[in-house]
Length: 295
Image 1: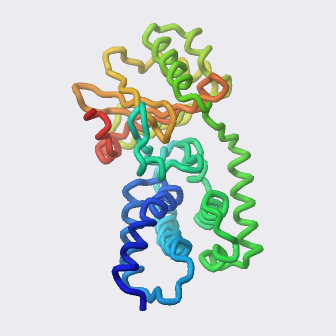
Image 2: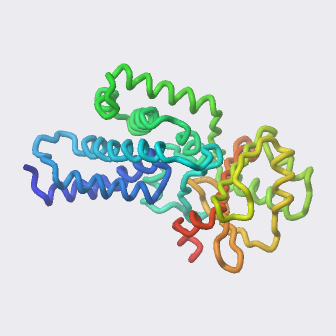
Image 3: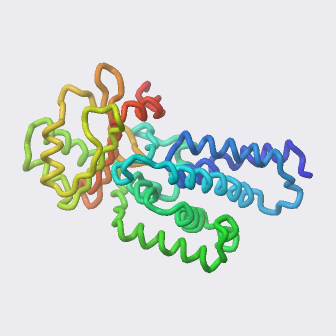
C-alpha cells in the first residue's frame, strides 16, 4: 500500500485541479469543497499501491462523488432551472490569485456554467472530463456505466447543447469589458433608455436568481428593450457598485448600508452586453466568499 505521506502530498498537489473539476461539475463552490473532502476520505481508505497516474485516479474519484451529488440534486430539485445562477467565483478586479487562476482555467465563464446546469449528470460528466480536462472516454465510460462509444455520444450531445445555447466568449480585454459595464450603469442611473439599449446586444439575456427572500422575482428576460426597461425600473444610483471579476469577467457586487445585496456577472462580447447573470438571493449572497470587498 502506498505510504500515507506520499498519498497526502499527492492529493494536496492536485487539490486545486480537483476543486476545479468539482466546481465545473456542480456549479457550487460549497458543494465542490465538500466533494473534494469526500474524495479525500475515499482516497485515504483506498489502496493506491498500483496507481500509475495519480492525477487521473484522483480526478476519477472526485468525478464519481460529483456524479452522485448531481443525481441526488436532480431528484430533489425544486427551483426553476432556467432562473438558477451557479455560484460565481468572485475575485479582485485587478488580478487573479493562483488558486483562482486554477479554478477558472480553461474558460469556465458563468454563462457556460449556466448551460452546464441543463445537462444530465452523465452528459455533464462526460463533457467536463473529456472536453475540459482531457480524460479519455475509456476512463470516463465506467463512471457512467457505458461503453467508451456511448460515453463519447454523451459528450457529443452535451457539446451540441452548449453550441445550441450560443454561449458567447467574453472579449479578451477586461478593461474594455469594464468600460461597457460602466456605460451600462451610467445609462441606467441617468434613466437613458436609448443609451442603455445601445450597450446591449439585441438578443441579450438577463437571468435573475432571487431565491425566496428577495424583493425582485426570479426570472429570465430576453431582448435589449425588455432588459433595458427592467433595468431602469430597479436601478438605484444610491447603491454602491463595487467592481470585481465574476468568473474572470467584468462584474459588480452591489451593497446597501455596507452589506452585499447582489452580485452581477456580465458577458461582454463584440463590445456589447450579451448576458447578465445576477444573484440577489439573500441566503446565497451570505454564503458567497466576498472577502474581496475587504480590500
